[in-house]
Figure 1 (cartoon, rainbow, N blue to C red):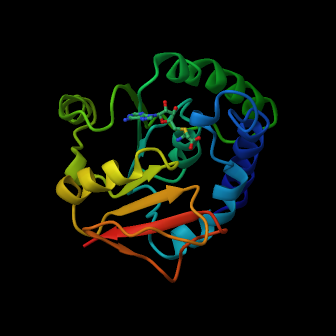
Figure 2: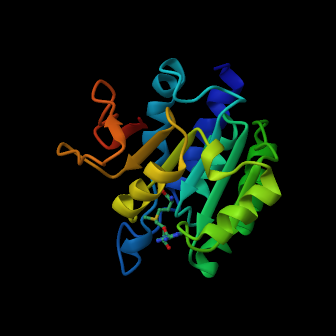
Figure 3: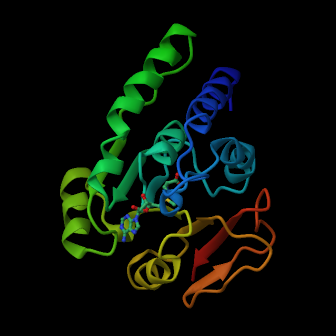
Length: 203
Ligand SMILES: C[S@@+](CC[C@H](N)C(=O)[O-])C[C@H]1O[C@@H](n2cnc3c(N)ncnc32)[C@H](O)[C@@H]1O
């Protein structure tokens, strides 16, 4: 990763981490990923070919304000998110505008135009069709799935049926005891990365 990209990603992480949701107060159900932690995982994710820069198709199941999408957009070909709550998804645009201003002022890289966020239930097949129509990528063509502990068992069941063999399901928010999901192999040598990110490969 070149220095400008590294510094830009660090700036993105810092921007969103100052605006975390749900760590305190009533919005715990939509807690935000700590992007500095994801940043700390990034070199290893690339080294282990979990992310193939410019090639990977990424999908966040329960993307909230799209912060993980924005972070990974620099590294992947396509960054797609699905969010159930409209008011949560609505925060994406204003935050992105504010971030872009800060990035530009300080000479950092702007995020690429490869982010597509959808309102709805991640398990809804008609939404998967809508994603396919918009991006030309169906659930069976994504390389990397992500969730922050939301409905991880239901999502694993869905992906066991629909995702392609070899694709990766990353679950943020796990600790030492790592669940197993039928149809997936825990990548034990990598998990939990930074003590919090577990990786599973579709068999
Ligand atoms: C813990 S937050 C994580 C947000 C973001 N992915 C992150 O890591 O910062 C989980 C989000 O998933 C959403 N959600 C819950 N169930 C969902 C579903 N079935 N489909 C889409 N979004 C869902 C919630 O509304 C919430 O905004």
